[in-house]
Length: 229
Image (cartoon, rainbow, N blue to C red; front, side, top):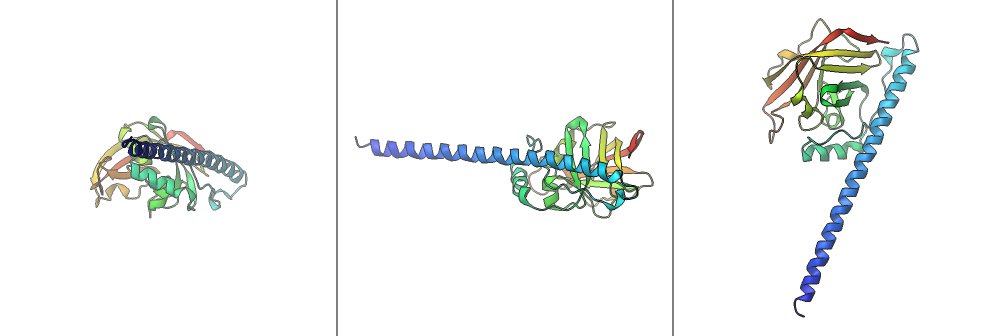
Protein backbone atom coordinates (compact mmCIF):
# COMPACT_ATOMS: atom_id res chain seq x y z
CA UNK A 1 0.00 0.00 0.00
CA UNK A 2 1.31 3.53 -0.77
CA UNK A 3 0.96 4.69 2.82
CA UNK A 4 2.95 1.90 4.43
CA UNK A 5 6.52 3.17 3.87
CA UNK A 6 5.72 6.58 5.29
CA UNK A 7 3.90 4.99 8.23
CA UNK A 8 6.86 2.70 8.91
CA UNK A 9 9.24 5.63 8.69
CA UNK A 10 7.11 7.59 11.13
CA UNK A 11 6.96 4.71 13.60
CA UNK A 12 10.71 4.10 13.25
CA UNK A 13 11.39 7.75 14.01
CA UNK A 14 9.02 7.61 16.95
CA UNK A 15 10.80 4.53 18.31
CA UNK A 16 14.21 6.14 17.90
CA UNK A 17 13.02 9.24 19.74
CA UNK A 18 11.66 7.07 22.55
CA UNK A 19 14.92 5.12 22.83
CA UNK A 20 16.92 8.33 22.86
CA UNK A 21 14.74 9.62 25.69
CA UNK A 22 15.25 6.41 27.66
CA UNK A 23 19.03 6.59 27.20
CA UNK A 24 19.12 10.23 28.32
CA UNK A 25 17.06 9.36 31.38
CA UNK A 26 19.38 6.48 32.27
CA UNK A 27 22.41 8.75 31.83
CA UNK A 28 20.84 11.38 34.07
CA UNK A 29 20.05 8.82 36.80
CA UNK A 30 23.57 7.40 36.64
CA UNK A 31 25.05 10.90 36.97
CA UNK A 32 22.94 11.66 40.03
CA UNK A 33 23.76 8.29 41.59
CA UNK A 34 27.45 8.94 41.02
CA UNK A 35 27.06 12.35 42.62
CA UNK A 36 25.33 10.90 45.67
CA UNK A 37 28.15 8.39 46.20
CA UNK A 38 30.65 11.24 45.96
CA UNK A 39 28.67 13.34 48.43
CA UNK A 40 28.52 10.55 51.02
CA UNK A 41 32.21 9.72 50.57
CA UNK A 42 33.11 13.38 50.84
CA UNK A 43 31.21 13.99 54.06
CA UNK A 44 32.66 10.81 55.57
CA UNK A 45 36.16 11.91 54.58
CA UNK A 46 35.57 15.34 56.11
CA UNK A 47 34.42 13.78 59.39
CA UNK A 48 37.43 11.46 59.50
CA UNK A 49 39.75 14.36 58.80
CA UNK A 50 38.15 16.42 61.55
CA UNK A 51 38.48 13.59 64.07
CA UNK A 52 42.10 12.91 63.16
CA UNK A 53 42.99 16.58 63.16
CA UNK A 54 41.46 17.42 66.52
CA UNK A 55 43.35 14.49 68.03
CA UNK A 56 46.59 16.32 67.24
CA UNK A 57 47.00 19.26 69.61
CA UNK A 58 47.60 22.59 67.96
CA UNK A 59 47.11 21.43 64.38
CA UNK A 60 43.38 21.87 63.82
CA UNK A 61 43.57 25.39 62.47
CA UNK A 62 46.39 24.54 60.05
CA UNK A 63 44.65 21.67 58.27
CA UNK A 64 41.88 21.90 55.71
CA UNK A 65 39.55 18.98 54.99
CA UNK A 66 39.86 17.54 51.52
CA UNK A 67 36.45 16.70 50.17
CA UNK A 68 35.52 17.83 46.73
CA UNK A 69 32.56 16.18 44.99
CA UNK A 70 29.52 16.37 47.23
CA UNK A 71 27.01 14.69 45.02
CA UNK A 72 23.29 14.62 44.70
CA UNK A 73 21.12 17.19 46.46
CA UNK A 74 17.34 17.27 46.43
CA UNK A 75 16.88 18.88 43.01
CA UNK A 76 13.09 18.98 43.01
CA UNK A 77 13.05 22.79 43.32
CA UNK A 78 16.02 23.47 41.07
CA UNK A 79 15.85 25.32 37.77
CA UNK A 80 16.72 23.12 34.74
CA UNK A 81 19.68 25.33 33.85
CA UNK A 82 21.12 25.10 37.35
CA UNK A 83 20.74 21.32 37.33
CA UNK A 84 22.65 21.19 34.04
CA UNK A 85 25.42 23.35 35.53
CA UNK A 86 25.57 21.07 38.56
CA UNK A 87 25.95 17.95 36.41
CA UNK A 88 28.64 19.63 34.31
CA UNK A 89 30.58 20.52 37.47
CA UNK A 90 30.85 16.96 38.78
CA UNK A 91 34.21 16.33 37.11
CA UNK A 92 35.77 19.67 38.09
CA UNK A 93 38.38 20.25 40.78
CA UNK A 94 37.18 22.49 43.59
CA UNK A 95 38.94 24.60 46.25
CA UNK A 96 39.23 23.67 49.91
CA UNK A 97 36.15 22.77 51.91
CA UNK A 98 35.91 24.43 55.30
CA UNK A 99 32.90 22.57 56.66
CA UNK A 100 29.28 21.56 56.23
CA UNK A 101 26.25 23.85 56.49
CA UNK A 102 22.94 22.33 57.55
CA UNK A 103 19.48 23.85 57.98
CA UNK A 104 17.44 20.87 59.23
CA UNK A 105 14.04 22.59 58.98
CA UNK A 106 14.29 22.78 55.17
CA UNK A 107 16.44 19.71 54.55
CA UNK A 108 19.55 21.64 53.48
CA UNK A 109 22.94 19.99 53.94
CA UNK A 110 25.72 21.39 51.81
CA UNK A 111 29.52 21.69 51.85
CA UNK A 112 30.99 25.14 52.45
CA UNK A 113 33.96 25.99 50.24
CA UNK A 114 36.64 28.59 50.85
CA UNK A 115 35.42 30.83 48.03
CA UNK A 116 32.11 31.59 46.30
CA UNK A 117 32.80 31.22 42.59
CA UNK A 118 30.07 30.14 40.16
CA UNK A 119 31.56 26.63 40.03
CA UNK A 120 31.59 26.35 43.81
CA UNK A 121 27.96 27.41 44.07
CA UNK A 122 26.98 24.84 41.44
CA UNK A 123 28.25 22.21 43.88
CA UNK A 124 27.58 23.74 47.27
CA UNK A 125 27.94 27.05 49.09
CA UNK A 126 30.91 29.37 49.48
CA UNK A 127 32.40 31.89 51.87
CA UNK A 128 31.90 35.45 50.63
CA UNK A 129 35.23 37.16 49.98
CA UNK A 130 36.43 39.18 52.95
CA UNK A 131 34.08 37.56 55.48
CA UNK A 132 34.97 35.21 58.33
CA UNK A 133 35.67 31.50 57.95
CA UNK A 134 33.74 29.01 60.14
CA UNK A 135 36.63 28.68 62.62
CA UNK A 136 37.03 32.45 62.99
CA UNK A 137 35.11 35.01 65.07
CA UNK A 138 32.92 37.57 63.34
CA UNK A 139 30.35 37.41 60.57
CA UNK A 140 30.50 34.18 58.53
CA UNK A 141 29.02 35.08 55.14
CA UNK A 142 27.92 32.13 53.01
CA UNK A 143 26.36 32.43 49.56
CA UNK A 144 24.58 29.97 47.28
CA UNK A 145 22.44 29.94 44.15
CA UNK A 146 18.74 30.81 44.53
CA UNK A 147 17.83 28.29 41.80
CA UNK A 148 19.97 25.54 43.33
CA UNK A 149 20.91 24.57 46.88
CA UNK A 150 19.71 27.82 48.47
CA UNK A 151 16.22 27.84 46.95
CA UNK A 152 14.91 26.11 50.10
CA UNK A 153 15.81 29.21 52.11
CA UNK A 154 12.48 30.65 51.00
CA UNK A 155 10.86 28.40 53.60
CA UNK A 156 13.03 29.13 56.65
CA UNK A 157 11.48 30.73 59.72
CA UNK A 158 12.82 32.91 62.50
CA UNK A 159 14.05 30.59 65.27
CA UNK A 160 15.09 27.77 62.93
CA UNK A 161 18.47 26.19 63.63
CA UNK A 162 21.54 26.49 61.44
CA UNK A 163 24.25 23.89 62.10
CA UNK A 164 27.80 24.65 60.98
CA UNK A 165 30.44 21.92 61.17
CA UNK A 166 34.13 22.69 60.83
CA UNK A 167 37.42 21.36 62.14
CA UNK A 168 36.73 23.43 65.23
CA UNK A 169 33.65 21.34 65.94
CA UNK A 170 29.91 21.80 65.53
CA UNK A 171 28.15 25.05 66.30
CA UNK A 172 24.47 25.89 66.25
CA UNK A 173 22.97 29.22 65.32
CA UNK A 174 19.38 30.49 65.49
CA UNK A 175 17.83 32.51 62.69
CA UNK A 176 17.13 36.06 63.84
CA UNK A 177 15.63 37.49 60.66
CA UNK A 178 15.17 37.19 56.90
CA UNK A 179 15.36 40.29 54.73
CA UNK A 180 15.18 41.32 51.09
CA UNK A 181 17.68 44.05 50.19
CA UNK A 182 19.03 45.84 47.15
CA UNK A 183 22.14 44.38 45.53
CA UNK A 184 24.20 47.40 46.57
CA UNK A 185 23.13 47.16 50.22
CA UNK A 186 25.97 45.42 52.08
CA UNK A 187 24.96 46.53 55.56
CA UNK A 188 24.26 42.98 56.72
CA UNK A 189 27.65 41.81 55.47
CA UNK A 190 29.57 43.96 57.92
CA UNK A 191 31.74 42.26 60.49
CA UNK A 192 30.31 41.55 63.94
CA UNK A 193 31.83 41.33 67.40
CA UNK A 194 30.09 38.03 68.12
CA UNK A 195 30.19 35.03 65.82
CA UNK A 196 27.22 35.16 63.45
CA UNK A 197 26.11 33.50 60.21
CA UNK A 198 24.73 35.39 57.21
CA UNK A 199 23.30 33.38 54.30
CA UNK A 200 22.95 35.23 51.01
CA UNK A 201 21.20 34.33 47.76
CA UNK A 202 19.60 36.17 44.87
CA UNK A 203 15.92 37.21 44.94
CA UNK A 204 13.19 36.67 43.81
CA UNK A 205 13.74 32.93 43.93
CA UNK A 206 11.88 32.21 40.68
CA UNK A 207 12.89 35.35 38.78
CA UNK A 208 13.82 34.74 35.13
CA UNK A 209 17.15 36.36 34.34
CA UNK A 210 19.49 38.22 36.67
CA UNK A 211 17.63 38.67 39.95
CA UNK A 212 17.51 42.33 41.03
CA UNK A 213 17.69 41.84 44.81
CA UNK A 214 19.22 39.70 47.55
CA UNK A 215 17.56 37.46 50.14
CA UNK A 216 19.51 37.42 53.39
CA UNK A 217 19.21 35.17 56.43
CA UNK A 218 20.93 36.35 59.61
CA UNK A 219 21.59 34.07 62.58
CA UNK A 220 23.24 34.38 66.00
CA UNK A 221 25.28 31.78 67.85
CA UNK A 222 23.13 29.58 70.08
CA UNK A 223 25.35 29.57 73.15
CA UNK A 224 23.26 26.85 74.80
CA UNK A 225 24.35 24.38 72.09
CA UNK A 226 28.02 25.04 71.45
CA UNK A 227 30.08 21.89 70.85
CA UNK A 228 33.73 22.65 70.31
CA UNK A 229 36.15 19.74 69.97
